[in-house]
Length: 288
Image (cartoon, rainbow, N blue to C red):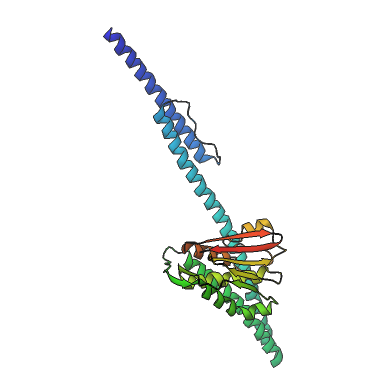
């Protein structure tokens, strides 16, 4: 009787081992297949053994992470290639103009003509300076070494100073801003320099996309809204406004980093920034 029981247990153990080895081979083969082929299919095993199914589930979790990272890498690589092409074009255009006007200066003794050429060269040089500075600032901001020092900041004062600083530029664009700022002091624990950069980038963005109007509000709750009509934007473009290097066709001489920098800085300070587009009106909201 004992020998029969031992024989049954031995047979059961052997069968169990055989089934486990079969499941292990299934996992091995399917894992190799998932790594080789670009597919969203996960590993599935025929075994009902809890430990083996837990192993398959754990591997599937890692596969999801791996696919996500692979997708991010692929998108980032594509984005970088496109960005290099766009930035190269944006830098080459003024550089080519500079070289052309320098050549023309050598060919003439007309002082008035030379002065006009030098004025154009200065304008193109400023464009190149702005583009390269924006790229440098972005590289510093996203660096792991970048540290944001927090202190008590008067948000209202910083916003008002920014608006005053852009009065001349807005006037040149024919934009008369409508400002609605709370009379109450809005204090937050932030980095003043970062907040100034955020507001500056939003002002520049408004001047690029605005159809001639601009509304800036600061509520008692601390929510800041930059709103303007933008008939040439689409819902897809609005969804991508905060993407690195993304520019809509209308915005030339831009790296497409302005709003991406703003989002990075706002998030570093613990806030949120979002864009809403309704009835051809773009609103960028910041909550600090």
